[in-house]
Image 1 (spheres, rainbow, N blue to C red):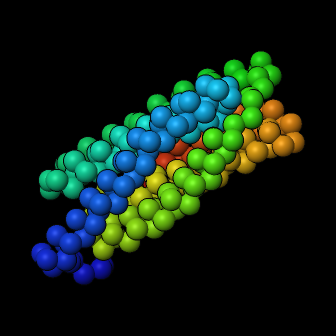
Image 2: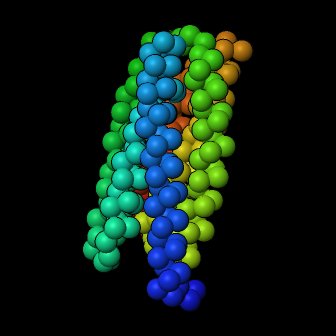
Amino acid sequence: MPERPTAAEALRLRRRGFVLEGITLGWNVVGVAVLAGASIAAGSVALAGFGLDSLIEIGASTVVIWELSGTGEQRQRFALKLIAGAFLALALYLVIQSGAALALGHRAAPSPVGIAWTAVTAAAMFLLAAGKARTGKALGNPVLEAEGRVTFIDGLLATAVLGGVLLDDLAGWWWADPAAGLVIVYHATREAWHIFRPPQ
């Protein structure tokens, strides 16, 4: 087992956790506005789904900030359940939205803003996820570690959405956009399952 941090180290790590979550929160608040406009203009299921994922990330970051402000195993368990429930809600929405788009043959319009934002977001989320993973492990905080995995998945999803939008724009593969939305369904469901059923 890793050694427990001293009181001074724990305070420093907790402050770092607050900073990382604050950056994530601010980034995704801006992202929701950018993606809402881009997805409406382009009619993109993938961009709309990624915008909803940003809302989930806002909720997850808020939960972690709340959890870091207190102590207790019961508080941690409740925080983890809130994060898992938010992922399941996102998955349900995207199953309906992506399924309808595929069934109707919906074609999204080009979205330069969406492409630029998802590319930058992918890089930012991977960096933030690495910081949260290190900080959560050093602090011995499973909620911060779990939210770090959420942020890493956010980076993976940004990459998947970027690929779907680019394939739609450049190759005319209209189905790539809603298919990218289904990638989000898979990862959101898997992460919720891992939170509810952690590995032994």
